[in-house]
Length: 257
Image (cartoon, rainbow, N blue to C red; front, side, top):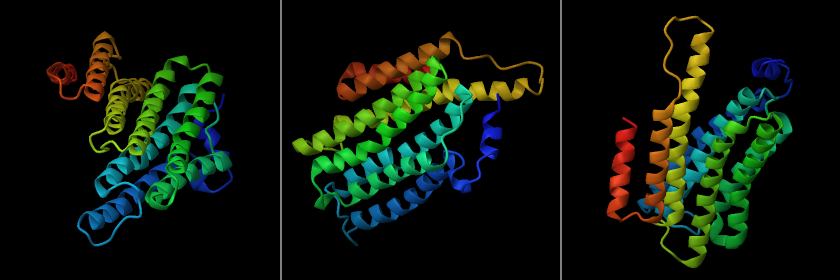
């Protein structure tokens, strides 16, 4: 079977659509710069953002479900072909997926003039499509053990849905469950990818070069650390002001050290 690199070389279309990280990492970088300028201007009163959310809430939302979601998509679209041995998503499907992300940024920015349910639906479309497309690849490749990473992307999407529901109900957004669920999902994604996937890639690279002594593989202590982190983040989402949450977060920090 051809490697992902060999499969990408056979793509004859625009280079930016030849692999998932290209449009999404570029889009995330450009969006981060533009959004920061827009937010600082709105926060200091130089201009206003035509969004249904205040400057702080818009900034928090777009950091999590604008910038971060694009970075997550770029990584997942790069990693999944290596996990499954299947062709990467390129060309038209990749362009449509990126367009759904860009559309979400536009509708949230101009949401003051749009129906809230339309804003929510179009904003949620991107992660729903990403989960569906990657889920199909993982299932087709029978790469069952990596479905858990896709589940974390589902939690990130759920946080966005809760954010919009809280907006519809008039609840405070900056301290709401949606923001905390989004942040918790992002932290857990970093913990899983940083603790299991990146070392696996590193080990595979080293194994091809016969370095001698190899680093220890992902083991029981690593699994325990991720489990403690997941529990602590869950408590922080639902019971942020409880003492037991503070102890759980402390235990999670110690377990990651």
